Image 1 (tube, rainbow, N blue to C red):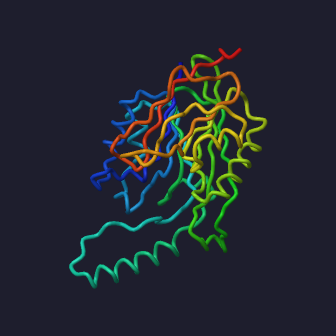
Image 2: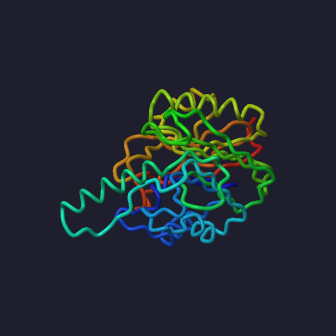
Image 3: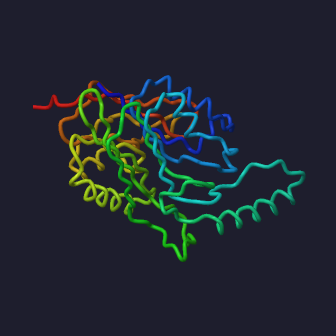
Length: 274
């Protein structure tokens, strides 16, 4: 049995407004996952106090393999500052916003250093192959400069060598724009046509309920609301399965107090489908 977790971490900021990488790591370690897919991961970002979110999770869960794929480089959000007056607050906010917007760029996906933001996969088991996939983008870019509100999107696939056999695990975070997240999911399905089976797709797809399963033709393993965390009424976080893999029991969506999404936990078994 393999335990999968997918979690949109909202750049590590908890319900109390604090960023605490160790707290994030401990919360995920308590779930005892074999593979974790993370979305909205900050690296060296001022807004998350330059906390090493991915390193903390990697150490806490005992990950043997970890890969981060940035979708944006540069500072992607406003840092929190202490301000002395309402006037200076407004001035500083506008100035910071302009610097941030002009400084953020679409990532190539393989940047090793500097501030960035993206998705990640972590595994306690060996990974025999990695593949990075770029998805269609809503917002146009001119010489790398973002000309609209939506961020670039990507997916990360890993062939995980589990004790029960190889499992292709794909993590992604799709657009919140309805027409485009469907197009991105179609594109991802095409990219993965030749990927080894069994396969699971994990992540915040920003697609409600059963529609993601209908688009891909893959089985949905999550049947509980995941968003917003405090009182969820929408399921936009998914685990989709294709091939000889199935849920060993009902998926759980847990409020960890660390995001506006719930963390989704599902145990799967391989090679037991008729």
